[in-house]
Length: 132
Length: 132
Image: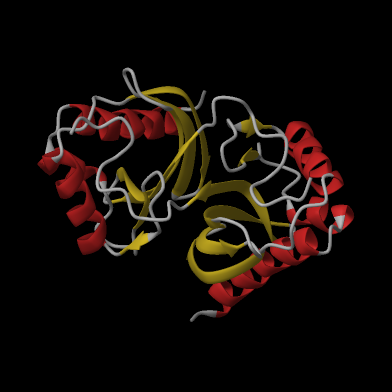
């Protein structure tokens, strides 16, 4: 694994640690300031822009969320962009999977996109809406 | 919108067009050869590597899938990487949302990551597993 991939996985871990600790300042610090950010929580529509995305995290943290842990994270880095896919482990909860896109900003890897989604208990044989 | 953003949205459209036409060669051409690719279909776990990802698309196309159309696509470009968020419109089906990450490969924008997920009918107030 390259030093850059390790740095990206560290940034990914810091994001989940901030969430698990319900640490809003750390969560805000994990997200990019510059580029347009976007976030898709499981079952939600796309949220765009830092204000809307941060408001969603504030609202979620106020709701006493479970301490989600990240597992099986894999990072790819190309230039100043990196993307991570990982499992999100919810204690006693559903199985989740996530895509996290990072950009290098002021020398640090910061989130520009988080997309979390649920994994069905059994793998669907067809995409939603497919005809049998 | 920059010429690069337009080129990325064109590549994103070509991906959905290939799917709607059940055109496997066009779908295969939409995906990157070089970097490690990954794909998360709605409700599925992460698929990694071109072989596994392409096998999933072949299997889905054989299942007579609906002609999904893309809407409200927004692209961000940084260097040789771009990421798109969009809605996926399924005729008579559920509401879907997607993240698509592209890299510039041989002068063309090609997919390295597709993550599709369902949007709940009503926006959840809490993340899955959150305590009330």
